[in-house]
Length: 203
Image 1: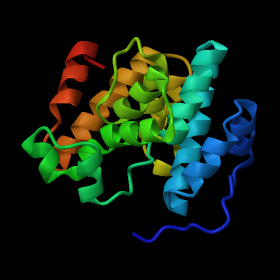
Image 2: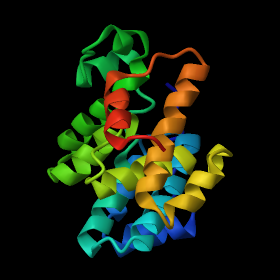
Image 3: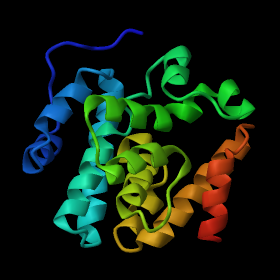
């Protein structure tokens, strides 16, 4: 796969500031060297929004750092070919064989572990950004929401606005809308997402 591996740039000032603020610049540069420019742009926007969500809901400094690091790392496996994804995260269901990107959260977790990440809160948020997490996992919730509604997607502005005042409501709406979108394009909903949706209740 062709990736832009030119001189790493953290581009957006807000993102560069967050990397420095939480002493994560090495991680930021490593991710920049792993992803295409387009995907890295998404990562920067998700990170910025996830931090805003964390601050809006008075996350502790450590929770906020976990949120930011998980956001930086959440898509590190997103551009891998199917065979590499399956090496990192062997499919567990026919759906995962048919749609390899369904495993990129688990694969990203495995990559992060290989890179030396040991914090379970970070790892679970990386894994959970695809199918969802327990509502008690606030960093995972923030990253999931930010991934669904970061400004570059051009959709779900209402979720982004709600996320700054009602974390639980925004999360339920994000999972529900993701489920509806998959159904609308004829992609089966993964059992992991269906389970999270049932646990959350109606949006």
